[in-house]
Length: 283
Image 1 (cartoon, rainbow, N blue to C red):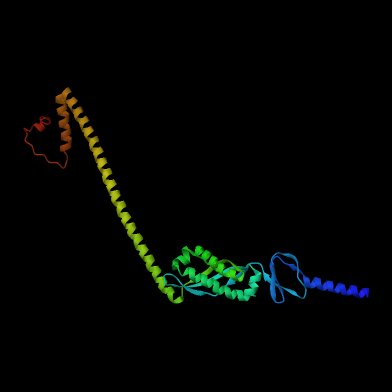
Image 2 (cartoon, rainbow, N blue to C red; image 1 turned 45 degrees about the horizontal axis):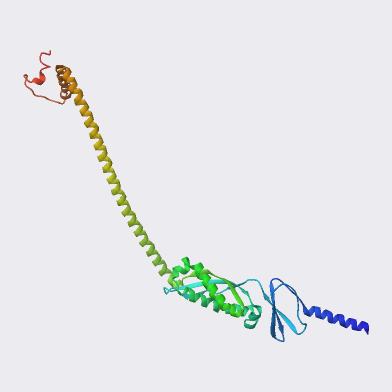
């Protein structure tokens, strides 16, 4: 009897250990369910216990999960349709509440469709298309993430990040937008050319002004130098005339002969002309 009792006790102990001992992995979080009702969470890794046959364990993922939606169309503030392809990262923050409201990740993914799309539509609908596509995308995604998380918390979920993978215009609008962009670029090009031509005219006018000033200053300096040279020459002539008037007159007359008499010049004078006095009597 003692052996039978020991065996029964050993079997009961094994059953208790098998059904009552749990090892929670660091990537898991567990909800203990008793008689169909969730009673407690286990979020820390390690060895844990439950009542065999009465309590059961439902395991949920503790790591980040990915949500990837199908492209959806939103209307921007400037009445443009924009097709967005977005994704999100989320986690189960409260497994007990998650089990009570969502139960499975598949249902949670479906609920995230509504939560994230609603937040995107509200936030992006108050901004212009170019702000969404280029200038304000990061700040808008932060707002979308914050607002979506506030709603998701009611279901035991936390949305960590929402991002836009791709933003496209509907196919029927692409050509119209391309034409507007082309017209805008042409307008900017004409404006730049006009501004460049205006600047070129200013530069040329300034250069011409500087040129005239430089030429005037050079002419003034040349006249001053020429005047100083002529004054010096007059002084030299005056000193030479005072020292020997006859020789001075002779030299000046010879200089005049060199300037006047050449092969191209014809000079008609009377023999009595005083200009020819030094040539008279020459043979």
